[in-house]
Amino acid sequence: MSRPSSRRTEVRAPPLFAADSIGKSFGSRTILKAASVWGRAGKITVLFGRNGCGKSTLLKIGAGQLGLDHGVVQFAGRAYLRPRLHEMAARGLFYLPDRDLLSRRLTVREQIRAVEWRFGGSRTGEILERLGIGARLDQTPAELSGGERRRAEIAAAWIRAPLCLLADEPFAGIDPADAEVVADAFRGMARQGCAIVITGHEVRQLLDTADDIVWMAAGTTHGMGTPQEAAQHEQFRREYLGAIRLD
Image (tube, rainbow, N blue to C red; front, top):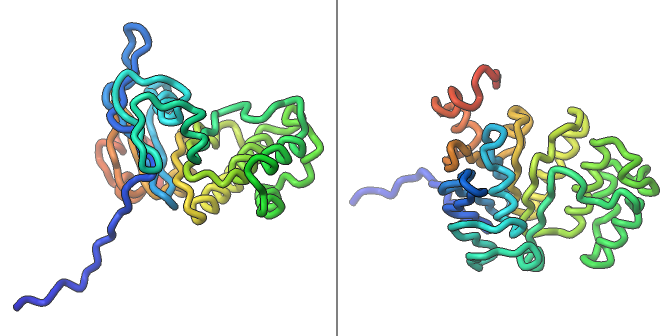
C-alpha cells in the first residue's frame, strides 16, 4: 500500500464576491466582453490593466452602480443578474470611488460620527489613529491634502466593517508615505476577514499589497495567481509590466 503524500495543497475558499463573465458596451463601443474579477475573504485582489481598458467599469458593475449587458455578480451567497448599489451595500459591500466619497462641506468628524451612528464604531479611535487623521477631524475634506482625504475615506469605509471592499484607484495621486498608510489599512481590513478588490497602476505598491492578481486586456480578464506568479508570467511582463523593474 502506498503511503499518502506529506505535501499539503492549499485549499482556496470560494470567492465571497465575484463579477463573472461581465459584458458592457456604451453605444457601439464594447468595453467588456467577458471580464471577471473576484474577492476572497481575508485576501486582497488587485485588478491590473492599461488606462481605458474597463477596470473601473467592471468595479462599478460589481458594486451595482452601473448596469451590465450580460454576466452575473455573486456576493455573500447570492447571485444578481441586475445588481443594485443599495442591495449590495445592505449585504455588506462597500464601493470606494477614485474621488469624492466624502462631502467636502461637512467636517471629517461630522461624517465619521454619521458612520458610527449608522454602523456602530467600537474601533473608531484605533482606526483613526492608524490612518493618522485624528488631528484633521475638525477640517472639511476640501481643506485636506489628497492623501489626507484618501486616508479619511478609508477610515470611513473601515469603520463600517464591510464584508467586501471594492476600491477604484486608491493610490492615485497620493505620495509614498500616504500610500504605505493606505496599504497597511487594507492589510488590516483583510486580516479581519474583509474581501478586498483594488484597481491601480502603482505596480510595485500593488504587487507588495496583493494576495491575488487579475489582468484585464482586450475586454477580458486573466487570473494570474499570486504576485510572484504574475511577475514571472512572460506575456504579462511583456505586455503590461514592460520595462518596470521589480527587483
